[in-house]
Length: 293
Image (tube, rainbow, N blue to C red; front, side, top):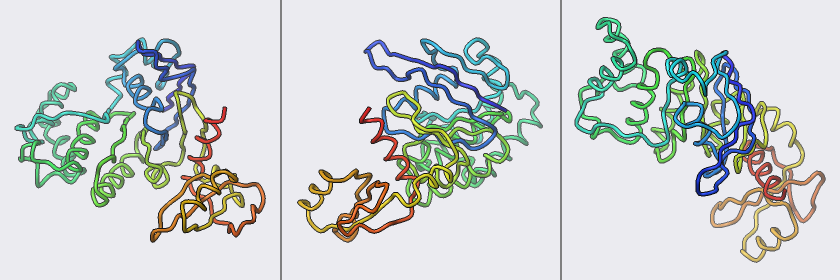
């Protein structure tokens, strides 16, 4: 299944240009959409999910015009938004049964089999009769995926799904997404680089509503091979001097010291050492280049 986005633009009434002539093609895989907060990711996800209209542009999903045939698209779509509410006093089992009926699964046997399978798949079976209001953040996210998977969608959109989860719940959620992504197209919209690195065979980076990069994560890393350098500095004065003289990508605190990573085509000297590039370098480099334009 192919999702083809062409020339998408959206300006809100307050003047914010959320999308600027954005074009993107997503194939049948787990696709990572990276960008900082305010980049336009959620606007793009809501538009694909038929929840809002753009000012201009087209979206085709497996030959279906997303903007003109929303009913057909919704039959193919599962959506986990960045923020979604639950009825706190209703159990996961009852809620999934209700949502399944709304999705058109009226045969009781088929519905029971589907709901039970999803509760097991999302590791919620033991808590299926507990009120949703008692669920932890990670359990609610797993319930969100369960509802998104009802009726066997062909495209699943998940918007910032691991934000706020503790490390254990994040791992559970990513493992769940990984299993889903082998069967359907999944768009993972996030600002967390590690999520994309661990899951996605293809990715794109957007900022200020514009596409900065699209490709295979491994290939983007190869393009930076031999061009990332690192150094540890002890004082803020040293750090400020480096910020003035070099193209800093990121800084990390390690044992109270600053580990600085820079981009340079050749050896920058000044005691910098070459290091292997990672996806965070790709991300910050593209954002920095965009900011200069």
